[in-house]
Image (cartoon, rainbow, N blue to C red; front, side, top):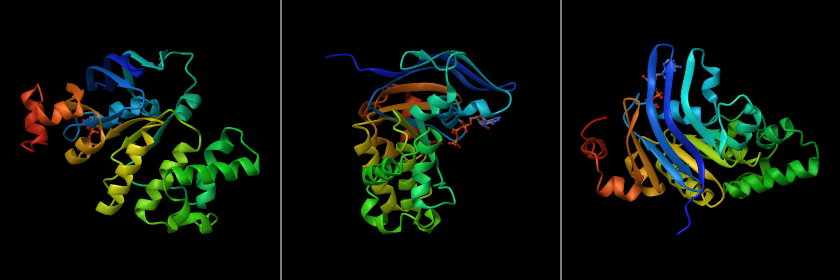
Length: 254
Ligand SMILES: Nc1ncnc2c1ncn2[C@@H]1O[C@H](COP(=O)(O)OP(=O)(O)OP(=O)(O)O)[C@@H](O)[C@H]1O
């Protein structure tokens, strides 16, 4: 079998917030078109790690990263890395849906316009394509020029995913994307994430073990800043190698 293509290759990564070391010797390969779930108790460094994949931590004063971090074979933290271009390729969806207080159409065209797309017809096409991709087109096609804040929480989150897709990323980072949603909206987002994996590489932080087991194919278990175990999701949830992983997934701590 051909070896899977690596989107991220992370070796011996240490991350410090000032004097506090939040990540310790993290080693992980993230493969193209995989859904990789990051699990572990609160404060173990999942979000910190996720944010380092599109250099969101650059915005945090005193944050320092050491180790070798490659994205598509290029040095993610090298001086030649164009951070704007990187964030276009590696998009992010947050815990709470955060549409701009603008229309649905403007939410989606914001990124493409920023990257120089001015053609109105092309922008309309992007709006329709991305809303169809997230299964929202039929629901909102008659209110594209109304405020995005009028949508339900689940619809807002799907809009945020459409906004992320509008600049044609390779990777979507998701930080607990369903934790603010009801079960029906959660089910829709989970199905959507699985659909999206045919085109994109997805890394998702979740506190919900069932969710990690249902939708991901690789799972990394973090504990106090280290990856204790990483493997196929099925193996992690049925026969983990580390007793701590088992304790965590069976709800004995965290
Ligand atoms: N901007 C920051 N400055 C200083 N310390 C921080 C900062 N952000 C996170 N930390 C610390 O780094 C550690 C890891 O935090 P992080 O948010 O990555 O954990 P997490 O596993 O995502 O937690 P949760 O599941 O609760 O979101 C914690 O001890 C946290 O307090």
